[in-house]
Length: 127
Image (tube, rainbow, N blue to C red; front, side, top):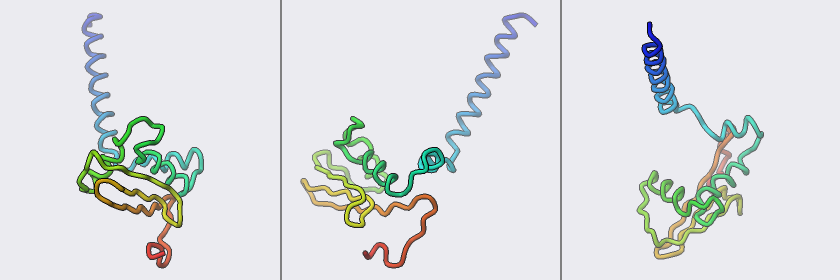
């Protein structure tokens, strides 16, 4: 086999392995970044809430503006108004994450975050 054929075989095998690896990554529904963070840093629910709130908050230092918030709203099938002014808080008054739109229409989204295999408590949402 010539050097050119060896190189072609190598490149073809590389493409095949890369395609399989990419497909496995796409299909991996079991991966959860918060489980990974917990395994490495041992963080609990309150830090998870703060992390999620950081991403959803359009004025956070991540520099992405409303990108994460708008995608979250899209996943919930909530109409997105680009002029909306949102405030996001975490771990305040027994609410894990609170999203409030104050303009032009008032909206409120409350997120009860469960992580690290936490279970619901009696009357938790009522409180």
